[in-house]
Image (cartoon, rainbow over all chains, first blue to last red; front, top):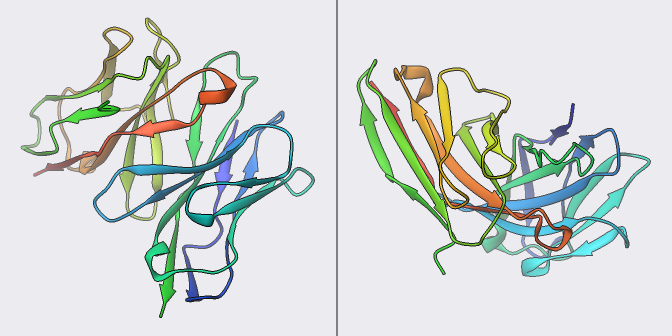
Length: 116
Length: 114
């Protein structure tokens, strides 16, 4: 069964410093991987996805993520954090070979706090 | 273009009452999902529908039923609400094609069961 782990409940970083939010997954085949962001009292917004191809994918608001198949990871990164990046971040996985069920599973989320 | 629309936004129920959460999408997506969000638990999949006419259980289906009324609409029903169902509920939809496989979310329904 597919699953996602986000090992950190919270990540604290100073504004201007690089940030990393970690995600590992478990899927039988090659996964589709996603990152979403949630601001207070809002729905989830799509940031970026990995489907195939280049392991480094770029998304909205200067975020990027690196797919590492050997480590089954898909960490979210940004070279220089902004206070406005403070939010709840979710990693998600879909198994494209699940017989067309399109089941989409999320991790528990990581709260990012960027301090001035 | 409204995207994914959920109603209602807020609801308070008494234990044992029933209600239906409505969800509609206008993106012609095949797949639709219902999640609940609880502190520290992330988003947990309740039910999903890969296409019109099909529904499947997710991680936490007990106490819920769903209906995929047509391609646009996917409703979630609580037959006899319990305090443990107090949560924020999100509906989402996604296309099946590789180019539009990301999910789009509604704004959520905050449900309190007293």
